[in-house]
Image (cartoon, rainbow, N blue to C red; front, side):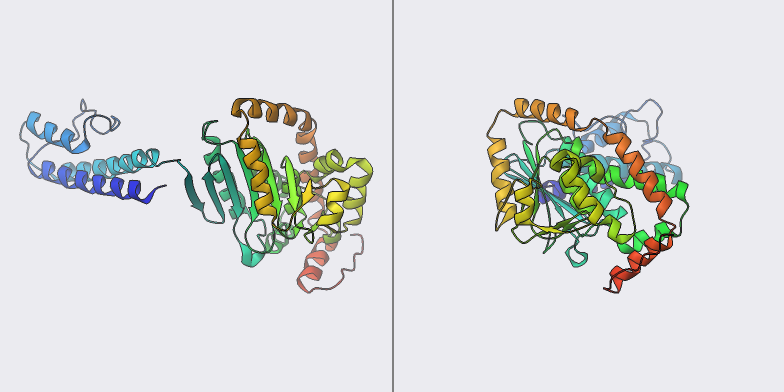
Length: 359
């Protein structure tokens, strides 16, 4: 949102509020049932002109607290419409940026960049981040094909994402299986909403991409990693079955045997090995710039054709995805209450090897 458009909206709203107050003081009833003043969009005639016209046409009436209240309420509603109208006029141009708490989005020359922005916690995935992420994706989906042609996903700081937040996982230990299953399905959906974008998505793995963090990267169409980036589907080492679609995406990318190796051992590979195994397309010292270069190449192609090709590729990839997500959510929900899960969380916090007992 351009700050000049925002300021313009605020000033127009303040001007309208003053006009409404003046009209109410002169006895103009702005609550008349037949008056569509508040419900009509701001178009050719300005809001202040509407107030002036209402004052000229309406018979003088005795002011009342109710009239003042209606005028104030109407002024606030109209100010809101002014802000929305100003936001709609905000230029997409070369750069349009928006910050949504734990997630940032920018759009430049047809390429959007989504940034997971909680570097002090290695971009750990929380409900709040998921909600911000989903909102960012929803905003980008409203962009027309000529404005949005590719998306790059990366993490701020030295990590892509360290996976699920440990405090949140501990909360799941204290919850019921039925509730946890619903919570997990909603949690997956927020981050996997990136697949709702009808343009190619490229994940730039600048550092650790662990557990659910790597799973979200695998949900992207292309991945680029730093040579020393640490990548792993480490759920079983935490005492938890895999989630976030990892049992679906990894076999698709690595084949059944390669996926079994990573999922069942929980081992971590570096960017070089990941590239050799096909987990990532290639390595780069600056994976963000490399991902943006790929995205720029996509953006130079015909946008409608690219969108159609992306949809066709994902239709094939999505076969069985919903079933996998339900199965993962149910499996995790059943294990959250176990002593092993709590041991895995505590061991990670205390930086020691876990001692799992099987219950």
